[in-house]
Length: 362
Image (cartoon, rainbow, N blue to C red):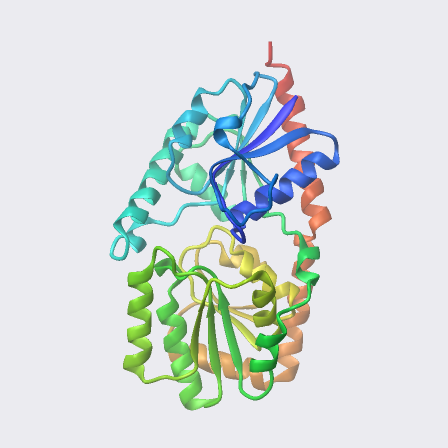
């Protein structure tokens, strides 16, 4: 029996791609014949990680496809034609209305993704949603097959690499370092991070810095709007890093005093778990899957009023007891994302589905 993974694009540092790679290791660890197939591949990916979808072998009904759904692609429709058993891994899709003012093509892809998700509702055999919020989304889209929740499999051993020393030397020391990592995209609401930082820097810590770590490729118009906003506010020490290496990302976590998230749409939000692992206290706006991923840890804000967020940042940086308590509770929550625990849960769910479904195969 073959178990293959299928996704539109496999990219270096992308959360969906990292999940697929980690699941491939899990499948091979117990002897499954498996590979990853993608429509397009980042040239920076190590050789052998994935193959082009055109190389995917013919599959039998006894085989299985793990399909990662996160955007619009012809694969959303071609999947339905496969004889193999179909398992959907749902990462959610950014609502196109966030993106339409800045990139009509990307918004179109997301709309096509939502259309594809609806099309597949009665054509897959089983679903894994990376959060409970995503599970509810699938139910609203009309899915009636079994849906289990499986958080993204994060290989934490990768986070024990040596951090970039230049970043640490440059920014460790005086002044509060506030961090957000993630694509520069309008659903992540970077303007709200900047507004809160403006108030924090003005009223609490004039030496503070805000690091916005992530690529703005495809969202240049939104990035330009953010740069203009920073200039209009007259606020200094807002750093847009663009795409950086993994070692640099680790270094930004290492120098960070607080991780601040104002995103309005997240299917899971891996950076929250990264901040937990790196011991950085989290302040996050309560939206989409954020509360589910935090699981009672971090500080969850019910509103994004900049003055209120800035005040919370000040409390967290000045009150060492509060800071220690927040970090400790985050470490406890982190145990729920333990790599071995998630891997075992994945293999258990998969085995149960395959065994249950085996009786229907002729």
